[in-house]
Length: 64
View (cartoon, rainbow, N blue to C red):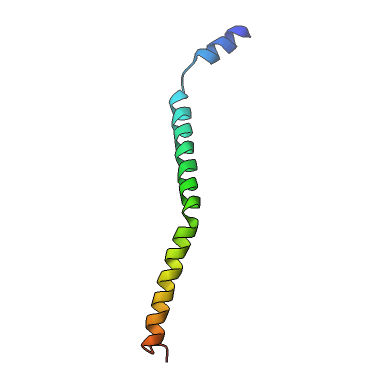
């Protein structure tokens, strides 16, 4: 039993996949953090754009 555990512990097959998944997880956490930190900025830019488009539409009477 100890020999099986020792050979399992020494086996490095699949180690690369585990490392890649760890790196991808860290990248995903970073991207999510960046997106959440810019949430208000993105919303503000979108709302300003919508307001400008609505102003052009109403000023030119395009919704009659």
